[in-house]
Length: 386
Ligand code: SF4
Ligand code: SF4
Image 1: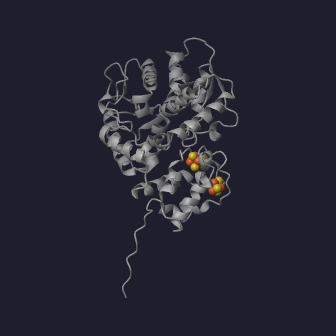
Image 2: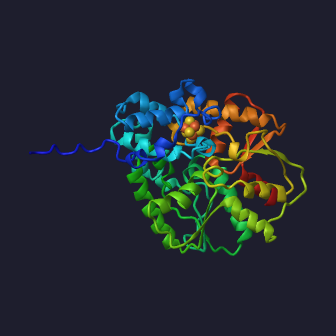
Image 3: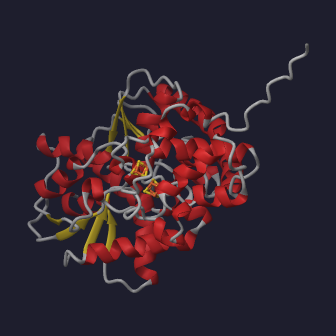
């Protein structure tokens, strides 16, 4: 008797979730009301619960992977609210990212994400800017070796250069003798590729960045980007990348240390009132809530919390997970909603420790004539201390 060869699964990345993880979802819908993308369609398939049902349908063979399913899954910003809210502990973000990896393999990835992958292969950044221009924001040669490495990230290198300048300014204020590095050959950390299902290229980037980090002699890596921080600190380990035990800190964590050590002080006592936006990849994903707030408070800044939507319940700016690249209007809609929540505090300045959130929120404020200045936290700290 001949046995038919077993057909290879089309859902290789999702299969490991089939047995237990996806079955955890009991369809309660607690995750739905505050999902930042649920309101875009108002169909359940545009909510976390619906996304879990689509994935379960594919795994059980009831649904074929399709353009419709891909569209619903790629609209998720991977903000992590549903995962935090889920009483059953469903790993919604891991499941959505695994589904995207399978969909991309099946040719159902988003066009803009394929362009991003191509641009990264050619220029080491998702924006398509020349790799030779990566440190064009700096007005001088940057040191390539030192105990402290500043990992700039693509957004701060090309789009939010104020963040890069302010970070370097603060590093130099505290380290006037040097001892730090900013690597000109730095590559995209790979975050956008991991979030959108292009994992092999992301792993290759991680390996190259790890070599550069080792070569720099760094004992501490710091970055002012929430996405880079999550990726280097969490995903590189999951990808099996060895960083030789180097300490990885989000820049406000380092600022907090420097303030406690008396290395950074406010220059004057100007009264500044701000509200604070938690980047999803820093807050819910990495549980860094206190340090950025402490930095501001220790420098005499009044921080007004956004009512009901701060820390774990913070709302997403709308840009992450590849959403801004493919669904820009939706990203700006979410950012506008976030700015309206921020307005309730009465503050006229919103700070956030992430250049990508800053970029998206700033554009939404300008587009909708919202009277709210948006700063990267490091820009405000540099203004106060240098
Ligand atoms: S991660 Fe955020 S955007 Fe994605 S389904 Fe969950 S709540 Fe919605
Ligand atoms: S993902 Fe969690 S919160 Fe959402 S419907 Fe399923 S069990 Fe409920």
